Length: 316
View (cartoon, one colour):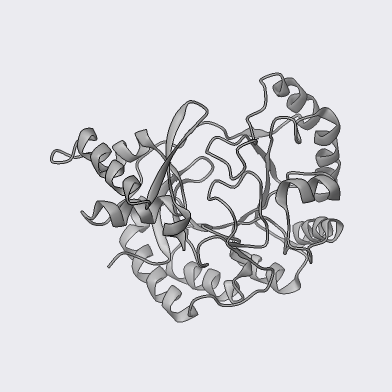
C-alpha cells in the first residue's frame, strides 16, 4: 500500500535527502501565497485541528522511517499545507524522535510561532525553518495573503520570542520576486526584522517552479549586489536538487501523483526517477500525455523548463 502521510526520501536543497511527513489534506493552509508551487489554497483556515487520526500517522511514521532511515539525512514535517495547523504536532515530533536519531526539521510559514502551543511543539525539533518574504504588513498581505486573523507584528514577535528559547537551529527563508520585494527599500525592511529575530542562517531563493500567480517572476540578476549589500552573509539555495526521488511500486500513475502533489517536478526529474531498462523516456512521455488528456496532471512551461503538476481536479 502506498504511504499516505510519508514520502521520499526526496532530494532537498537545504537538507540533503529528506523523508517528508505531510499531515494535512492537500492545500490546507492559512496563507494563499502568490508564489506557491502547489497552486491555490483550497482549504483556507487558521484553526488548528487533527485532520487525520494521530495514531494512524504515528504508525506509518514508524514503518516508513525503519524502511528508509539508512538513506535519509533529515526527517521533515512539511508538505501540501502549513504543518503547525495540526493540533497534536508535538506528539508527532516526539514520536519521530523516539523512532530515529535523524534530526527533525519543521518547515513552516511561521504564522503561528506566536502561539504558545505551537512554540512548545516545535521546541522538540532540531531545526525550524520559517518564511519571511516581507518587512511590513502591507507587503505581507500582498505576497502571502494570510488568514484575516493573522497579525504581522504579532507574528514577528512570535519569531523573536521563539528564537530566544529554541535550542536548535533556526533559519529563515526569503523568496525574492521581481518588482514585488526585490527593491533595496523592501529588502532593508526585511533585514530590519531579521536583526530583531537573529536567525542562525538566512536562505534566499527565487521562484524556480511555476507559481500560483503567473505574474510572479524571477528577479533580474542586478538584484544580487543589492542582496549582498543588504544581507551580507546569506545562503543562496537556488541551485537544483540533486538525486532521484524514491518510489515504492511499479504503478507509475499512483507514484507520480503522490510525488507531484507535494513537489511539482521538472520533466527531467521524472525521467531520472522512473527510467529503467524496461521503461524509457518515450514510455514516460506517453504516460504523461495520457494522464494529461484525462485531466489528472498538467504541463507548465516556466523559466524555459517543463514542469508537471496535479490538476485541481486531482487535488480535490
